[in-house]
Image (cartoon, rainbow, N blue to C red; front, side, top):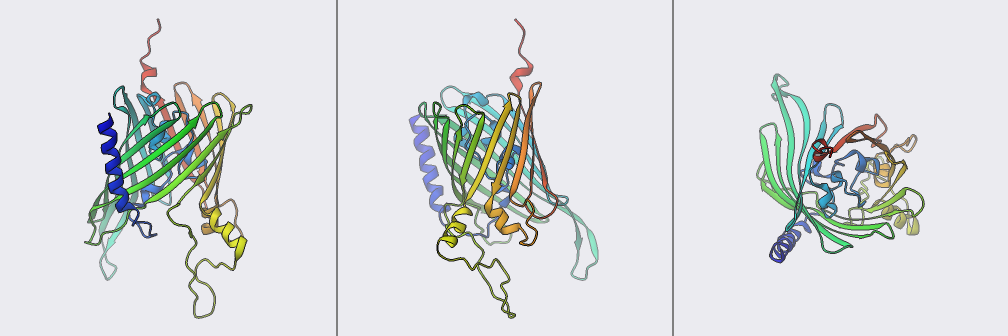
Length: 348
């Protein structure tokens, strides 16, 4: 076991060397950053650091993988922009000596496009999509600390252009059961392209993130605060001035404390989950960065906000969320989770 852990650490350090040079904004395989489950989407849309054996959190935070995810199965579907949709299927398996594993297949389908030549004549249709096969591993070091990692094989097919890549996530979690407090640190999408679309190597969406969650002692309410994109302080768009003297991208006249607060908040996502009954969970999230980037000043609406609910029905847990990412229709997230063993239990 020590040799296995040491090997994992050395591999992680190797990929970290590659990953820290990849903090630019123009990246490939961006589908890896999409919220993969309805629960995560409802809490703000990045990852979660809630330690309650939910297999749907393992893709984004492998240090939450536990033996209790053994034979758990999760499936998710998102009705995204226009004809786009994406989703995943995930399955957990535990082994006494080496830890617990979660295998996940992610995909995004960009739909069907018309193929035309340079004069605009239609030549048929083509499809595009991207896929990732993840193998996650997690293990508890003691009653409070756990570690985990994902390794991802990535394939992208855009018309006749193809690309393959390899990435890893590494994560660690501290959990205090008595205080009902959890904290995680994650280095995600450390890696590179193995083959490119046209000979130009592009960066992966590398990200450093951390999260905290706290469940109140006498109320079934959990608050979470996530800190994203810690590898880069300034997440505002660069200002470019047009010939008319107006700013064509995000304009900022802030200074001092106001400017510091704005840049700080762009890293923060706030979420809350209430369990009024044993079989029902209600969720809400707020993503400040999304609101600043996508809201229209004259009519901001609910851009940046998300909400969702989870219901346990028979042997299934069904989750649904809606996320307002721009001033238009909100996206629908669906997730279904079950434990396969529950269908084969015999009555003594």
